[in-house]
Image (cartoon, rainbow, N blue to C red; front, side, top):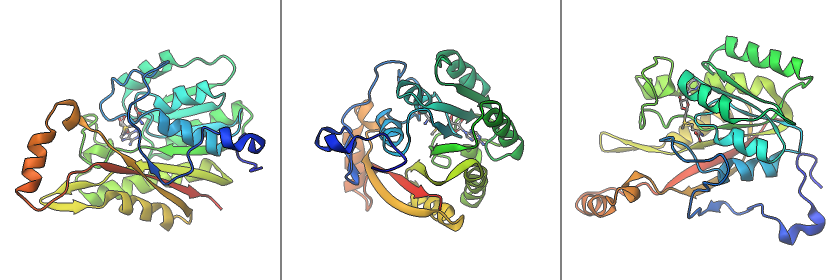
Length: 261
Ligand SMILES: C[S@@+](CC[C@H](N)C(=O)[O-])C[C@H]1O[C@@H](n2cnc3c(N)ncnc32)[C@H](O)[C@@H]1O
C-alpha cells in the first residue's frame, strides 16, 4: 500500500484512478463549484486524479497558479487542505468567496509566486495550521504568452521572451519545492506553442527546469486538448490551413509528474 495515498488495493479493480499515460477526457466536469468560466482553466479531472493518486485525506495540496480555483474545489471535495496563489486580485477574491473552510482549510493568497515574500506568507499559514509542508504541488502556469491573463508585469504570460518565462517559472518551482515534503510529488500541466512558424516545445523546456532542480521525472502523460477552435466551429479552417502548409494542429498537452527525493 503506498504511504502517499488512500487507494484501497484490496479493491483495485474498482479503482477510479487512471494508470495509463494517455488521458482522453471527452468532456469537462461542470458539477459542483466548477463552472468553466475562466479562459485558460484546466478540467477538474486533472487535479482530481492527481490529488487521489498522490495525497491522503487531511494533507495539504498547493497550487501557485490557482486561477479560477479548479484545484481548490477538488481538494475540498476530497477532504484535503489547500493553499493557492494567483497574481490577479479579482480572481482570488472570487475563489476565496467560493471555497469553504469548514473541515479542511482553504487559503487563497493574492501574490506573485516567483517572490520569497509570498512564500513567507505561506510558511506562516503552514505554521499556524500546524503543518510542516505541503504534500502535493500542482502547477498550471500560463503557456508563455498564448493567453494574456492580466496586464501585470510579473504575470508569467507577459514575459518578454522564452528565456524570461523559463527564469520566472524556475523561481516558482524553487519556492514550491522549498515547501514540498521530501519523497512527495509535483505535477506540471503545460502545452507547447508555435512562434514564427516554429514549434516551441515549452513542455519539454519546463520539464528541463524541474529536472535541473533535482526532482526525478516519474511520468509524462499526454492529454487530449479540445480548445476554442472546436468551441467556435473553426476546426475546418484550421485543417485547411494545416493542409495547405507544413504543420500539425495542437491536440495535446502534457501532465508531467516529478518526485522530490
Ligand atoms: C493557466 S492559468 C491557471 C488556471 C487554473 N488551473 C484554473 O483551472 O483556473 C495560469 C494562472 O497563473 C496566474 N499567474 C501568472 N503569473 C503569476 C505569478 N507570477 N504568480 C502567481 N500567479 C500567476 C494567472 O493569473 C493565471 O490565472
